[in-house]
Structure formats: C-alpha cells, structure tokens
Image (cartoon, rainbow, N blue to C red; front, side, top):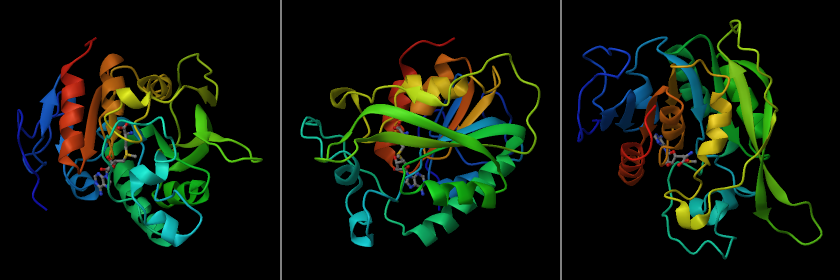
Length: 269
Ligand SMILES: C[S@@+](CC[C@H](N)C(=O)[O-])C[C@H]1O[C@@H](n2cnc3c(N)ncnc32)[C@H](O)[C@@H]1O
C-alpha cells in the first residue's frame, strides 16, 4: 500500500533519524509524527528499538455478544445508545473481526510494536470486558510480558434496567522484557476519568487526554510514545503536553487531519 504524503513530508522523526526507506509522514512537527496508512504496513517499515512506550486504543471488534452484533457500525455499537450524543463525529473501520481473527491480527501488530519498542519499554492496550481475554493472549503472543490490568472508570455506560452499569473499560499493561529502575511513584490501577463530552469529540471513541497523561506518568520523560491506532490523536496530544515525542498511525484521512489540527493547537513544553 502506498503511503500518502501531505504536510511537511520527510522520513524523519523529530528525535530519531529514520532510514530513507521509512514511510513518509503526513504530519511532522515538534517531535510528533503522524503516518497515514494501514498500521501493520507502516509498523513493518519502522526501525527496531526506537520507542519508549506504546499506548494504543485499537478497534475493539466488540460491541455485542454475537457475530452479527460485531459487524455493525462502530459508532452505533459504542456510542449510538446515548441519545444525548447529538454530534455526528463519523465512524471508523476495522472493527468487525471475530475473536480468532482478532487474536491473529492483534498478535501481528503487537509483535511489530514489540520490535519497535526499546527493551524495558511499557505497553498499554485498551479493550473492553468481552475482548479482555483475547487481548491478554495477543500481547503475550506478540512477545510482551503481561504485567497487569488497569481499570478505567469512565463514569457513564449503556444503562440496562436491573443490571450492573457498564461503565468500565480495561487497559492491558505489559512490558518489553524486564523493566529498568523507575521513579519513586506509585499510581493507582483504578483510573477515574470522565469521558470526553460528545460536543467536544472529533472521534466516536475518543479517549480523554487526562487518561493518557496518567498512563504516561510511568513512561520515561522525554521518550517517544508509539500509538499504532491513533484515531484523532489523543495519545499524541498527551505526549506533546508532557514533553514527549510520539509516532501515531491512522488509516482514516479524516482522523489524520483531526489529529494534525489538534497537534498544531495547544501548549508545547
Ligand atoms: C478506537 S479508535 C482510536 C481512537 C483514539 N484513541 C482517539 O482518542 O481518538 C481506533 C482507530 O483505528 C483506526 N484503524 C482501524 N484499523 C486500522 C488499521 N488497520 N490501520 C490503521 N488505523 C486503523 C480507525 O480508523 C480508528 O480511528
């Protein structure tokens, strides 16, 4: 697949010089790079051991108990139940794999991410309760050492009479082998961060910047964060706010543009 080039194209990351064979960036500024393209394809072109942390929110391929439910429209599956969500922020693709194909596919991009991560780097992968077992298998198949689970309490969830509220999502935590000595901090594995209000979202499943900033608190200062499914660029924005570099990959040109716009605004440390 041919990668497209528009803004400031150069096979250069702000901090790491990539080889001439690296893909062309759709956005490159202040140590933050966006590649527009299919994630696995782009990952395969990036060099070994260049990033300090991986944070990603891949298409969950969830949203229902049965195969027919999964193949529905992603925006409808994840936010369509909320009548207060009046804003149309579009949808996204790649979200209808069954569990077997999700496992095979996720193992591939997790293995590539593992290769691109430095030894000791940490990786955080978002998922929901249905896909949690397959994601914990896939991270290990990709070479990562599974270390634990973070629980995101997002405050709201699809209400169902007489049933527990579905207001939690999960972040699978792993590392590229043994982890180095770290700072004297002990963040909680319970993350209470409200979802982004619907009228402030560019993406239907946009994560709050504050949530990603919490994950980044244990990633090396000044390091490079990789997000192979960046959507509207929340991970990149959090990296920029915290003085880190970042590499994001996104297949949908609309979300690449949203990410580039978000990154060209705001504070730079
Ligand atoms: C769950 S969303 C990420 C949302 C993001 N966390 C945010 O805050 O905006 C997953 C993204 O992965 C993108 N995607 C799906 N399949 C892809 C693929 N094979 N390669 C690259 N991006 C892909 C979708 O277009 C979607 O925007």
